Amino acid sequence: MRREALIPQVVQVTDIRRDTPDVKTFRVVDLDGRKPFLHIPGQCAMLSMPGVGEALFSITSSPTNEDYLEFSIKKCGCVTDWLHAIEPGQQVTLRGPYGNGFPVDTDFAGKDLVFVAGGIGLAPLRSVINYVRCYRDRYGTVDIVYGSRSKADLVDYQEILDEWCSEPGISVHLTIDNPQPDWDGHVGFVPNFVKELGFDTGKTVVMCGPPIMIKFTLAGLMEQGFPRDQIYTTLELRMKCGLGRCGRCNIGDKYVCKDGPVFRLDQLDQLPDEY
Amino acid sequence: MKKLPLSQLDALFAAIAEKRRLYIPAGEAGTASFTPWREGLKLTDALNTARSAKDLFFPQVENLADFKVTGKQIQVIENRDPAEPFVLFGVRACDCRSFDILDKVFLCDPVDTYYQARREQGTVVTLACTEPEETCFCTALGIDPTDPAGDVTAWMAEGFLYLRANTARGEELLSSLPLLEEGEKPEQDRSVFEKLPLRDLDWSAFGGERMMERFNAPQWASLAESCLGCGTCTFVCPTCQCYDIKDFNTGGGVKRYRCWDSCMYSDFTLMSAGQPRPTQLERFRQRFMHKLVYYPANHEGEFGCVGCGRCLQKCPISMNIVKVARALGEEAKP
Image (cartoon, rainbow over all chains, first blue to last red; front, side):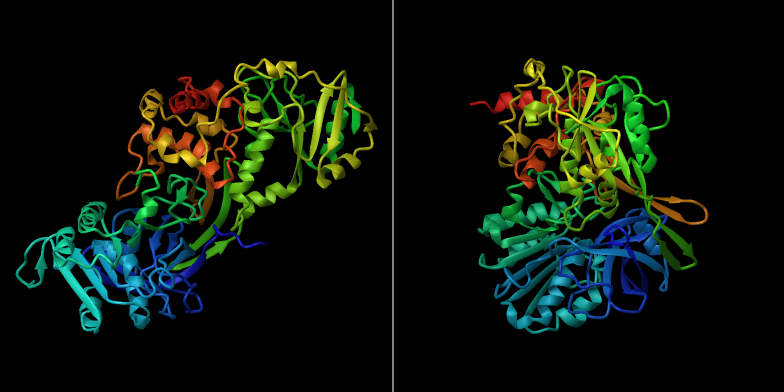
């Protein structure tokens, strides 16, 4: 029997970490305790619980992690509500990886990188950031701009503080929407913060976050004179198959599941505005 | 070429059905469908079936897999609907072309093994058209209804059924039928096809190259205005292949099945984060853009329409791909 792409493998959740009030990170291995498959930063996979549903999530862990896959998941629907209620040891099903991923070994090589993330938008970028950290000498400067509603809503806050902030050659710029007593960092929305930081327009920008953040950050970057082919983002639309067949996730003639989810801004310019 | 007196059609069906399941178009016009042949079942008088022949390769509902859930454990149980050898008799040229269009979607890497199994088990016997309807426009899409493709092509003329094998699978079928005699079919009068009202449809405004222009055309608003979003067009369309994957809890386990879905429905693209196609305008546009622009962009200019005319007959508000093609084609003229 030929292998059918729609039939998933059974994997187990070995660890669940609460990141924010509505985000948890799930660690997943196959039934032999190994990483289920190899992937490229930015790729996605279909997680499911039979009887509950199947949904696509970006893989949060870096390919350089050889032991497991991680998914940072915000509670916002049927499947994610169920996932947020499970305990370690629970089995789920998995198929993938899907999509193109970020061009970490080609277009990004040698470039100065600026990561811009908002809220759960850090999930797909964390994979790239940790990949870049692992192969640090292949890239130029690294800036990470990350914002959230509040301090408690910053995903992976501990990893950011303990590892990213203390690493030489990486500048982390955190911001939250409103002031709060235990926060002495920047306060304000991501788009303005990016403007204030005034990055050199020769840098490559990698962005993920809520549509409103992307819209205003882009406007700012355009004002500053960033070329459109130096800006990357990753998209998500509803998907059932992950193979470009179920018909939901197309933007024009491109399917987010297989032609994306990573697009350059100049590529998106060629597509209808329907996302 | 083989032939057989039409008076012996039942004997031919019986001989085919001895070895394989045989489907023939049966029933009255408007509701005719591909039906498993049984003694006494007659070929329909209708030109075509109400639903297309895609059902036989891409059924409306099919099992993907079963799951058994015990505590925290999950077991995947392969449980496919079996694909057994079958013969599909009486497929029209339009529906036969739709298989090529579906093949490009389902047989590219990674191959859809459910669809592939049915394609491998099915022998397609097409039937040439002699009396097209006014809604037919396959000729405007480069299809010859008098000489359809398929594993075997059949013609009915002057009291005989003529059969020509086009593939090894077709040869195999014909050579297994000793009641066939040798014969040559008479020349067919094609004049009726030259009088079809939609024969001159102009598709030059469409194709992969002019995506943004067509997408942003102002005509979509008025074209989509009366669309009810019922999905009938996608249901009867031989090339519509969008699907949903759903789970059904049987009590003792979970069945994961695939079923047809429709881009005409509001929940098709609905996400907890929002709705990229919020009104019927976007959904309506998606369906026609897919067939006339996106599919050609991804498949060397081939359109995702075969001109069967079902959507012209079945749409409750009489909107269809021909009206869309005309409205947008008119706009595209210099």
